[in-house]
Image (cartoon, rainbow, N blue to C red; front, side, top):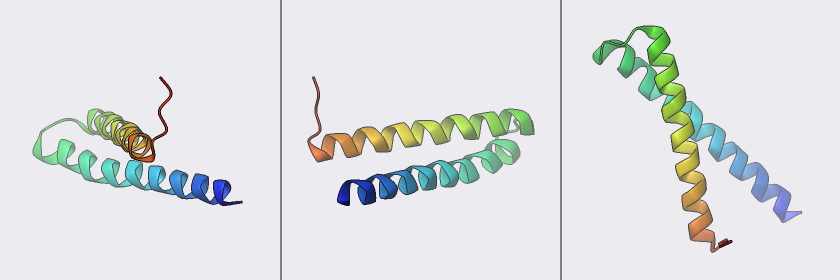
Length: 68
């Protein structure tokens, strides 16, 4: 039971990290950095996925879940 709660919590934090990063990076790239909005959206999506990957790796290291 707790594994499913941990998985739901992990998914919620991953989605939260993705959304927050996207919402911060996209307008900055579109307005301050001078990208067109298509490029800004792509840049925001990439930054969001990097944030999720970083959070996942950090959680894995902190949890001691090492395979290798």
